[in-house]
Image 1 (cartoon, rainbow, N blue to C red):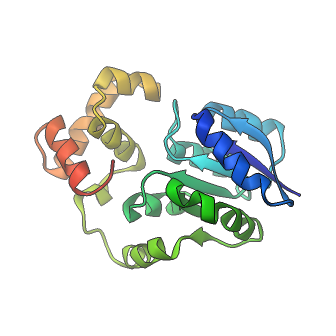
Image 2 (image 1 turned 90 degrees about the vertical axis):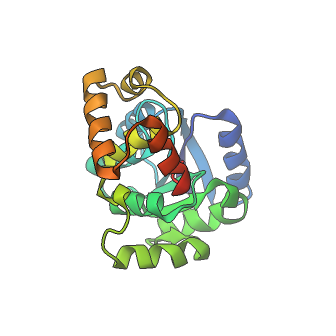
Length: 208
């Protein structure tokens, strides 16, 4: 029996994922987590064969949680779930140690196969995403946002979603001054002037 931890802060999403998984007799959801901190608590206390992790988690986002998981349990495979099919985001998750990346819209038809493939030692991406990812892995940096660190990329996406520095500081558990420092770096690297242009850049490149 393949033991699965589902990490998503939306109850409806978790229930939907559990229903999909329940259709396969050799898969079982043994635990759920509503935040990144709860994911870490769970993997320290319990054993799982795979984690299905939402990329947009409260407190710590999925990319940061993924790195923590790989530090604590390097061999524990993680399947990233996201609303974003874009290769720029998926590529970052694979570089951070993800074993698979699945758009939530594709979950009903692909989740079970993705879990089984990953647990057996493979990697999983949809054929459509693979066609976009492979060129991105082979080429050198082409877009300004490729130069952002993972933390800068995280702050960039939060700014683009409309959150102010105080909200970002609270969500990431860092100081407002630190958020402003990241914002200044983002503005410089993207060659933009303000939050409005950051949001416009993110929309144009399909990063939010």
